[in-house]
Structures are given as C-alpha cells and as structure tokens.
Image (cartoon, rainbow, N blue to C red; front, side, top):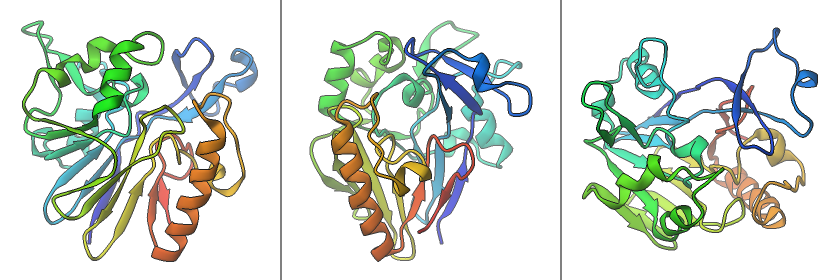
Length: 248
C-alpha cells in the first residue's frame, strides 16, 4: 500500500507578474489582491512505495525562518530524511514547480541539487524550452544544474520507469508538460501537474487563459477523469487549497 504525503508550502496568489504572494485564510482577502489574481496552493507530494520515495515536483524553493528549505522541513516533519528521496519526477519546469530543484548552500555559497541521492526525471524538450524562455515563468538559475549532473534522466514522449511508473507527454499547460501514473499493483496514483491541478477543474469544462493550450488541457482533464474513474486512480492536486488528493 503506497503512502501519500502532501508537502504543502501554503496558499498564494499569483497575477500577471507571476509573483507568488503568500495568502492567509481569515486574514487576507482576494479583494485586496490585484485584478486577475488566482488563489493556489503550492503542494508537492511524496509517494512512498515498496521500491521508492518519489517526489512529485519541488515547490517554490523558499526557506523557512531557520534557513531550511521548506520542502526539506516538510519531509523532516513527516519523519523522512530528504536524502532518502530516490526519484524526483518533474511535470514541468515553471518556477512554482521547480524552485526546489536546486538551492544555494548557505555555508559554501554554491548551488547544488536539493535531492542529491535521487534520480531526477525531466522531459528533454521541456528542459530546452525552459532555458530558451527563461524569465517570468522559468527561472534558469534554479534548473540549470539539471543539464550538468549525471543523476538526471531526460525523457521524451511516453514511457515507463522501473516497470511501474508511467509518464505521458501531454502538452496543454505548457508545450512539453508531462504527467505520471504510479501503478505498483495495489494502488494507481496519478499526478497531473498543472493539467489536473485542482478538483474543481476536473469537474467542469474549464479553459484556463494562462495555459499554453487551454482547450487541450480541458480535454485532457476529461480524459484523465474518465480513465481515473474506471481504474480507481487517486489524483494528486498540486494547486488545490482544500483537497490535496482523492478518488472519484
């Protein structure tokens, strides 16, 4: 039986500037935020199977007041040593998903991968696209090490990792977005990244203006919803402020 651990970094609003501003329920109001702001959770996941400690995306890369990476602290709070993570599966490389790919060591001042004992899986075309379009959505400094380390596997198209983790190139949210399905024989756990980021979007024919191809993303959500119902998937929702994961 796989164990799912949401690693929420909190709720944020984001607008056209692509800046993520913390949002506290009961204190902050959407009315006070800029027009067009979206309220999202930033929520990587750890899935523990018999074979692996799998991290899905890496959050914003922020540090807590003690200087510890938030994602490391959340793992520690759940009894997990960050060095135990064996695989880091990246849906895409927008900064809110890849900010924790690497970090600058406060002592040495040098940048290193945040999960040095893990194998990172990144779509090859997404890597190239991210470096070509570095700016608001992609932060080159966070991800450039992926091109320089030998514990990174660049995927192309659809395929399978170790016989039980399936990846599928979807596009939609960005041109080379990919999704993952973990099928260990007992559970089927689906991570749709920003193609299936919130349960409300799964239930409606929502076309997002911020997607590269909003119509494609909407169609993909309908496809994954139907597949998930038939095969009893557990969906992981990276941006849902209320429901981290669940089945239909």
